[in-house]
Length: 455
Image (tube, rainbow, N blue to C red; front, top):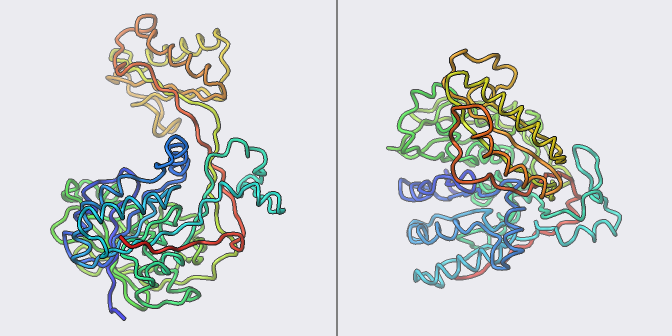
């Protein structure tokens, strides 16, 4: 058994800093690289992509990244875990295999393919079998929105990832794997933790929670003393150095920017925490109130004392469904009387929309520079505020109504208050709205599948 395992975060979301994974594998010693690509809405986006192209449906950025780092990973024996497979895990794995072969690593790379999370095709089967799926927040039955569902994915935990690693996978790719499971799985695999060792599983889960958002734990998006955080242009992404007893240190590579200290780790711990005594994952229920943090040197924070409780009998399901159309348009009004001009333009626009008889679920106005961030708490602006951005968004069930709204922004330039600018790039775009339907499903209905594919 190793005395220490280093798991590095290389991606906090799909679209994160492209150089971060390269820096992690080349900037110092690590054992594992975890890459988190998925958010709730991402699955529906990928599902729509695959409906247009059967070969799509996964994060193609991941394949491009693997082309860059496969040589490093093979040479340094770094194993990679990611949920970049989206709704086409097999397609993603095939692309990685082809890339490895093109680079001359055929026969030297095993790919673990984890599936079973995508239950879109099984929803009717569950309903017919008497397993009614309900919105866990509102109690609304799935039948109310069934015809509009675009994606349905179970949050699967670390267990299938551990199986893939135990079977020799160098790269593990799946769909809706939990963010925390991508870090927990290597620790279970390396240290031989049992899947009912709740305290250690909770520790590994919290380690994963701390690094799942990338540089958000190492100085990025950090409120505490943000002006003095060094060299964010070269920010180092976080790394967990874990021990067999469940204690771990959060750190980053030497020579990188950003910072790892108790405040930066605390801020990340608060992210999506919910009930601090019951952070529920498929693997364990972790108690955040048990966490102890202490400085352990320059850019090092030791985390210990974590306890956990048994996991629940349910998986969480992320369901996305079509919920209408939206569009957002903006104009900028300049001094003098910038705020008064923007308010007048909003009144004019709303009057014209009413006169056209358009039907919207919501018309929302924000005055950026005045109250878009803090709302009513912002109070009244300075009388001589130099500029205000008028931002108006509409949401409705009829695309034709939303499209007509997009044609009413530009006319304000010559038919409304003076000194307006900022209308560039043409009319606002019409976008489909994807709504979120969280639910629970018994674990007994879900069968994760693990396949090992050789390059």
